[in-house]
Image (cartoon, rainbow, N blue to C red):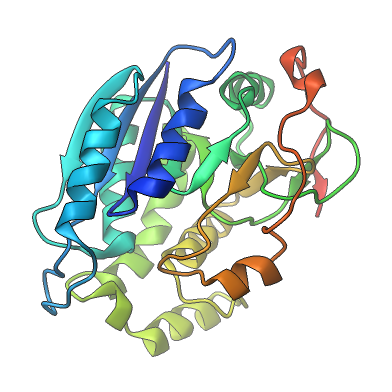
Length: 272
């Protein structure tokens, strides 16, 4: 069983495509999908972050998606993407050993859940592997190629065991963003934390905080060299259309490969 968490807020036009990708999975192992929706008004600053009507629409889209549906979690007030993802990850890892965390703006290959199960089996017991990203653009030749690489966190499959190895280190970042509007987080304090551990990522996002925690725990992330997903979130907390295009996500090519229907193993990860 794979527990799938879809984390979002008020973008039903993206969520509809994300859920359609899940509904089209072929030969997938058993899975359950839970929806996590943040609130519209920030808990600490009172800043209006999103539209309540959009959040309602997302909940309705989920009800009608025709998926093996779990629960819908809705924050009354907005707590920000960092804390919101933390709460979702903690809940999921208490109930599932194999977890797929999805943001609400990614379309998976119809083979991805089957391939993720293949990867879980192939790398079972590896203390150096945190999790698996489907990739969102071609990074290397060869459909069986895997890279050690910190890619965007639109989609990440990992085990609860791997999360519990990284979790204590993520608390250092979590302590900085707790109790404040995520948009008003203390960037200087985060940079001090990163510098203390020689972490050179210029971003102060929760994604960078998770990547630091994973590396401090002795683990690394694995990404497919030939992508099995499409990022569609041109507009969001960390993206603008211009940045989205500059990162190479605008026209990445197909994310569906015929050989994936029968693939039973990948190559050993290489540095990417």
